[in-house]
Length: 597
Image (cartoon, rainbow, N blue to C red; front, side):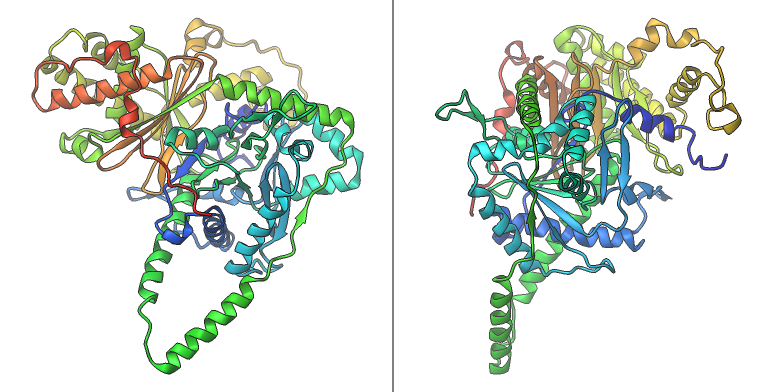
């Protein structure tokens, strides 16, 4: 089949690109990075400089084909998604969006207080055309330039907020913006074709939950000014959700990644985050080694000369440009409506963080159990503890060992996990231990089948074929043919509808570079579970729309503690938290560093 590399690939991209709801919160996931180990890089500009510099090095590696292949044990994985990590943007269109990648992109976009700046970082040959010190001073100058504007001017230039609206609204607004002037059309293209977007936020999150919210959707802060009913001054206006890659850096140096999900998956961005963070550690170690200089007079003169050159270069900045949009009153009204809509949605999202410090992967592996299966079963039991029923639970499974592979749907509620959940609070821990082992074994089988491509994604492809009314939609001779095919009963039934209502949507995506990982719920009454399993601790970001996220997290913590009691041979359940009503997680919260600008 010419041009077809995976039977599901086009169908799956269509599923994302035909989605008409907002992609902010609903679709774009986020990573919160660990703090930079270098003490001098805890300020916003220093951290942003390091991240941008390391990101450019990674981009050069991708373009040169120098990345070592991702591996699953001994199996190399498909690397195609990396080609769409940089210079890529989702373009809103009526009915179905497009995705464009500019392979020759040479500039980056910087957003600050809603304003958009850009400057070149690579030359025509793909080499870095600025030094790290010039990059740092350019970012500092951009931040200073943005401070000169009033809140009214900020919001009136915040075209990026329109990317948070539903796709039809944004498509109409974008078409209007583009048609108003050639300057606007060029400005949109500048954003679309940029390598990535750097968001310099003017807030300093003090808790993991606050940083997670900043990474997912920014902050909504409304201040009253004379003659206005309130003006948005939060960081929610400082995003461009259509870009494949947004780096978010706060004033206190806390950093995160928000990415558009239609053509790249979390595992790809995870490799990017890991390599970028690893380089910061290596450079930190190199700086320490470099501190032991020779004390000869020649060496001292050489050091003084190098220092003078560095100070002279540090005073320079790259030539940067600020985009000034040509907007009419109708578009300004659309911006205000988009801001109000996103602020409403932000208020509806309940995003909580559990940093579970009692144990982690090492303890679970010592029990000869799968850490991922263990956490997945704990989530199901916790949900049952609170709601006294099971719910459709979806786990993202990676299929990148196949050419152009992406993900498979793991529907992980089994008879064994249900039996454990139903009996967990009325049986002894000795009985629960045996049920837990059976539930874990069943879960591992489901995951293994899905990872080998033997899940249910093919059913979705068959449904798409049926809806298109032809058995081989890629065949030119069938294009435009009149269909007599009806939708099979399988796709009309209650079971199919339940299977596609993911009350618990979950994904395991972590390594030492990440502190948190999460996303919004995928249905209105659902929960989004992003989790990271480390050697001696676990992190969970749990989200919902106005449901009892805090109680569910408390139930999860109790469940994890009781699982451990069971495996250690104890026979009675630990007393439950009163009605799962208190935020147990507070004792595990570790504040982010204070601002050091």
